[in-house]
Length: 410
Image (cartoon, rainbow, N blue to C red):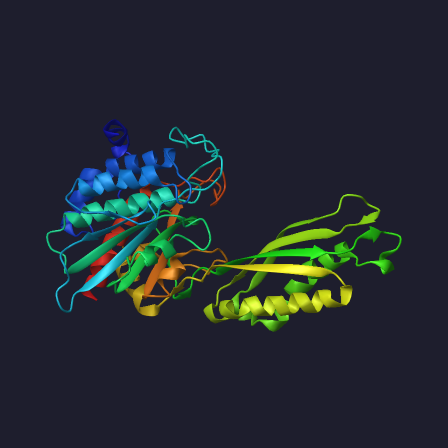
């Protein structure tokens, strides 16, 4: 590992160098190469949700090496680690969160540190998130004085619904926390820029599974049975349309079908069929009302057609809704750590992110970290070719450390 770190140290450009505080400049100057080596190690050894045992061990070893006392979550993976003394009256506890799991994808980047695990890859940037949080933790551990406590949350299982954030909450890891912050790689932003937004930055994401049943029959006599394929088509086209007329379009509510299966023979009406899709919204109140509304609309579409149906509505994660005050704290931390030029606005995404569960309990803000090198095509998230500019690691550490300091003093 040390040889890997020394080989990359000179290639790491610190885009926020000289912005301080001085102890953070010193830590980054001494550890920039090591930071890249950590990320490459984690990238080469990805682990799926709730199987992040080696990643947890790797993090625990480095945290304990500087005198910290990380606590493994009761589920067996993921860590919580406090930095700083017990807060005095009037002092705060601020949380920084990173997700540590990988995706069930086969990497196709061709990088020398590509995944060594068949069918598993860090194609969403969680290796970078984890490395940034680890760097921030070790840097903060060496701070001369913290006016409060910083709680590091290394969360498992972000990639599965309803998300490992619920494991963190069940363990009481947010008890006593005043604000929480996090970030996510964004390959559409150039390295050195960080996107922030007040309000919803991601959407709620639910899974719909609809199964239809019919007596079946010959396609020459559809009037003697229930035409199941026709019924599937009615739902495929009708449900998104009805939702668009029953839900405020400003909520960003979107239903998209991902799979449909029914029948084999061209002259036989099948007896069963299945339809699955995702339903997303950027509005918390709308999310709470969608399940009964979807069931009502599916029933209205299918009742005239005579088919039976079973609808399973799997609620996923709530939208991530950044509050204004926390976002201002985050923006001040980014400006202090990287510079005003790093600040960028960012649109709401229809993607899901279980950071939203934390914001059901405490205020906070979530940002997008630019990882595009500035030239070449965008290598998007959740794709086998996803890659990132490693200069973003130091940008992220500077932003998160300064955000924590800003929040403690706010």
